[in-house]
Length: 420
Image 1 (cartoon, rainbow, N blue to C red):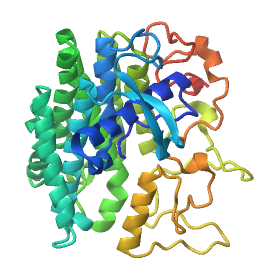
Image 2 (cartoon, rainbow, N blue to C red; image 1 turned 60 degrees about the vertical axis):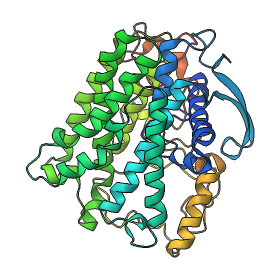
Image 3 (cartoon, rainbow, N blue to C red; image 1 turned 180 degrees about the horizontal axis):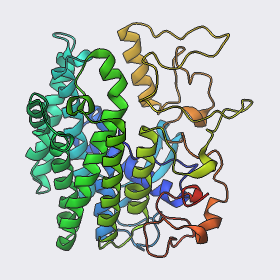
């Protein structure tokens, strides 16, 4: 699973996290039911925002003010290892928002594999070993086109992103916003189509604008996170290619964040809580994470450490990290990964168990379950207990009154970024 919108139970209000997980699991099961088991590997944290937006506009749940209430577009899913073998209420696989999210996830995953192949990066670029991955990418692109046709969406804008991006990358002298334009256009089209699915044509332009800003942020964050590795490999990176400094990239993200907040504020929604928590709060958190800064005051100066260990300071920005990564703790031998086959097998096991399994060379091998599980890890607040008690002090929340109906701060569900 990949993407920048990753709320966790420790900094999100319980209702936000439960609703987000309902859409995440619903997307995973929609991919399985409509495109096969292998397609579940394309599950995308960011793609599920399309399911969230469609539901928020249509008011498909019974009782739009309760994000966790079971409604006509929910069903009970069976036990899953990624949920600790617990059942859960999830979005139905025939929901049009979930189907759009599945289409976009398949298209993005297909494009990512093709990007690796064209860049000569990883297994996908290998002449023989990469054949199955390239075939999977082609199959997912075809499935995305078929799925898009069934809901009236033109998937061409998604499937052509890689080709358009390659042309721009091959042309020197481009500005950063020219390089991010294909991603912005694709995300804008997907966001705007949720208004069609929800029969809210008045939201289309604001959604298109929100999608454009969100696509820009996601593209720049990806470039920032890959900068050190791309420099080490001599590979293309949008920041170096366009002569954009980290400070300038941060400014681009800040301007886009402001535009995204304004666009979300102007949307006509039946239920705003989850939309604002993801697009306002979690996007802000993703930018802070990418640039190695925190906008949450002193409460987020340390990370939650495993039992018996003292909290550690937040990790440095990837822009400042040495190319070889952080050194191993004193007294411990360096963890050296094995060959490609074992690494691939371990990666599959990690994915299927949502991080609960970690191989012997992993730094998370001996970490407690809540540190290993992707669905439950948090790199922000060491202690958010009682954070919603300070709702009256919030000054930077998305909704007008600063608080949501269930007594939690909106924006990102945690008051530690509203002051301090």
